[in-house]
Image (cartoon, rainbow, N blue to C red):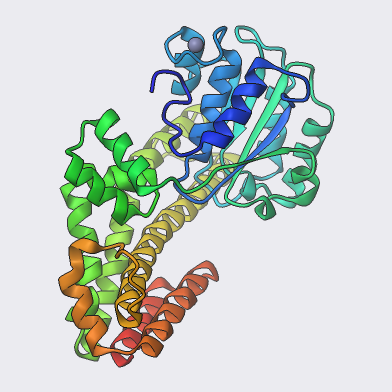
Length: 380
Ligand SMILES: [Zn+2]
């Protein structure tokens, strides 16, 4: 612990590369980086820690003003681009390039962190490419994406790749104990259940509610009997995902709408608005709908991840592979499922889960996709 890299658990190689860059050895530093790694490996945390270390006079002490303001998002020379939208278009990208070209006022560098570089549209990428190809002398770009292939090749090829890995269960558990003061047994359980996803592990360790939800999802297959069970269960999953999205989005939406109205100089509902204002309000409402959909989909995606882990465990028992179970705590649920089916059927269910994920990405109505999945599970 201690310095800004302390929380990047299980990422020793990446941290070493970043430390060398901060010290600024020959060829160690470059002005464009692409942070890649599986969900939960901490791409944006790593990028932010690197930004702090670059600004800090002591290479990322974690205590000085440069470090603290960078990590909290308040540093005037560090722009954090996080997007709740599905894509980053040309206007937003131009704004990034503009802020990147300004000389730093307080820090050593002008840094732009783009958390979802995989969401930059093709036209956006043209604008971004200009910024990366012709950087101002003190500008540093830190792009983040799940995979290098997710980023448009012309951009990717100009960035130095920094690969993060899935941290081990032990490393995640240790972090929960040391930093969040979680009980060691609970930390170990949460780390294992989250399969290397640090944020998810923390959520499970801290929230009883999250643990109950996980338990409900994982015991679902044993409770499904009839067709109508499947339809009801699918509906419950979808409505709880929508409720998640609502909880996150409603306060954000209110804030954003209020500031848009203020910027446009228009009042609340009922007053007559000029046409350009109506269009701007409509655009924002559309963005809001898209964001809600995306967050609900993330929640459903988590459900699929949990079901995948469950059936991997079932398969492990059926094939006697002897591998440790991911959901050790649910061995009472997993054993009967394993006895009831065959490895072939389990593989078939795993395929169906994968198919469901593809359907969701392809914008099939979630309700239909989950109905089909659950019916498939029941019929084996
Ligand atoms: Zn510092």
